[in-house]
Length: 203
Image (cartoon, rainbow, N blue to C red):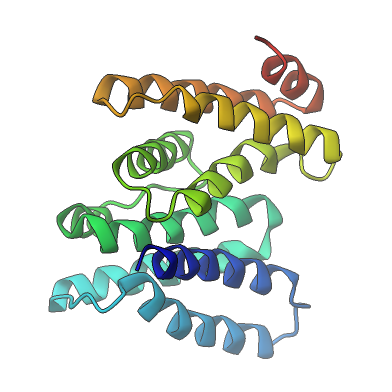
């Protein structure tokens, strides 16, 4: 069961990547996104039954974020949003319902902070899909410098994230501290490659 959870969440993220690399063809691109929406729905919900109002909220979550995939800068955050939704549906149904009503805004700084908070909490709460949660955090840290960085920079991001998650003690306070540290890395990355390297290389 844990492996299936992990595989489903990885599939969600990989589907987002597939949309991004598809060539933009008028008419066909929109049809492809609609097909993706139908594919994502069962993967995210994992058999969860929604009430009528929740179905509408879920459709809004999908429909508002798929158009963002036209821009690579939003790819990592959009993938993370859908992965978080899938993880919450599997582990915390009530929190998932709250997530549907007020999802993080991926283009907003506070939205990024909330997504990281969810990722850290999910990582601390269950081992079922930690590898995919770990991967999403690395993508959030490395994403802003992906086009200018190199393999060594990706390793720097991976080592930084692994170090912060290894210090997580599974308490609320520790989750908050870890989330703040990771958010600092994301902010440094958004300021450019030089600041990214300087910030993540600190002991």
